[in-house]
Length: 350
Image (cartoon, rainbow, N blue to C red; front, side, top):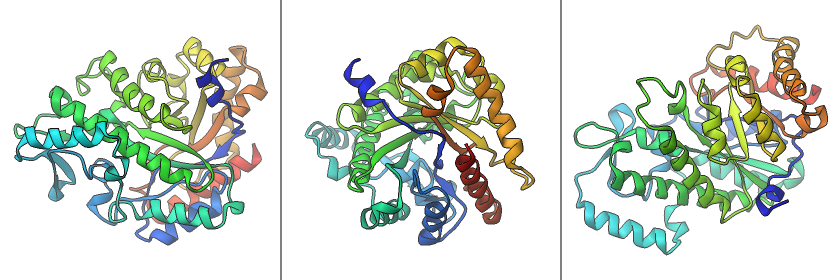
């Protein structure tokens, strides 16, 4: 068993965690809800309604070169500053491993600091993991436009700097989360890859694999974090697996059938120590009428299929996490609370 396989060993047994965004404006209130319902793997909340700074692309842009915030439409654009000087300065810091320079500040992610402090002060209240998240490199680059309103996915120089900057910022986050004494799980959130292969995702498969792999390998080589990729729509899951994450997180409520189209790749992924985070509680389509029994039935379809592929039930349980289908930032607060309640109850029942 090689070193990376050893690092991927875990015993999840249907523990629950979250995706990121929440509808609340209150930092302490949001964390309190998370701690109450999913203490086994608490995660830090992204308060997307609080400020544009917590938008998933803007939130991870501090310290990166040639970026400016366009507050009016909550987006990032390439600035008109001297590009050569800015890039030289960035690469000097990146190559010097100046990780603290790329910190996320409290203005951009107050929920992050609230989580770290709470778990550090009362570690006995929580399970063996804490979970963070960052925007994935493809979604990040796709969300940044140049002066011609074109994505920097097609600008090699700016793309390279953006992806390396995102990777070193992710490492800063992992190191801060490790100060809780818990093992870190970090998800790369890649909504841009929903519907991959359509005319709306003009990026080649090998490019996606390369961008994801660069960030994953950078973090893995410098920490013992478990790294997941979250995509809440239909995508090319063998492509995601090829990039080398420890965990893949999908919308199991809405896309179970299409996820299960890859028996060979998924079986190998699990046999090699990978884990599945089943996004079994709906978010965008949540009605409030959902029941534990109904969710168990939907989840059971996937679990049964895995067994039919020759994976034993114990192995499946060890490598299974539960999450909401996606973030809850656009939901009504009362319904979002109900999502966490259902998630917690389902986790305990399993």
